[in-house]
Every structure is written in structure tokens, then in C-alpha cells.
Image (cartoon, rainbow, N blue to C red; front, side, top):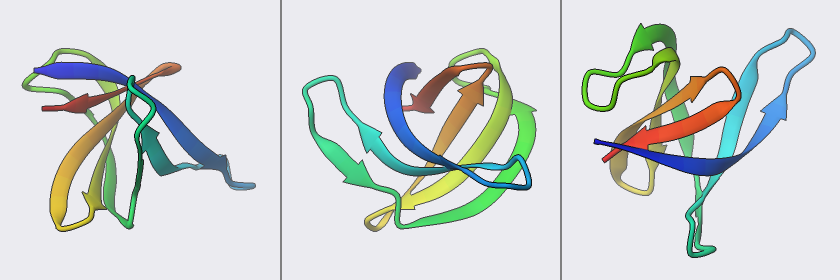
Length: 75
């Protein structure tokens, strides 16, 4: 399943986009502790195609996607 979310990200000078925080719809903010992998791929759980970020949020590994200008997370 897919959940569209807000993301605070950093635009790098080499054109990479690095997510820093996820902002949930109720206003809660979760820091992204580490980006483990970035690759172009499709989401198998929620549809959509774009960059898949494998991230660590606390002790949890999650897939975060950037599809054009829309961020979403697989839940």
C-alpha cells in the first residue's frame, strides 16, 4: 500500500535529491537517519515509478519513493 507524504529534502549540487525528514499528515516529523540505497524502480506495493530510496528511520528500514514531484512511502 502507498501513502503520499511530505518530505523535507536537500538538493545537492550534483543534482541528487536526499530526503532528510518525513512529515506525516498529522504533523509528526520523522528524521531519516540514513539513506542506504537509491535506484530507479517501480513500487510493487503501491504503483508508481521513480526513484526508490531505501532509508533507515530509527530501527526501521523503509522504502521511500520520489515519483516526479510526489513523495510516497510503502506501508
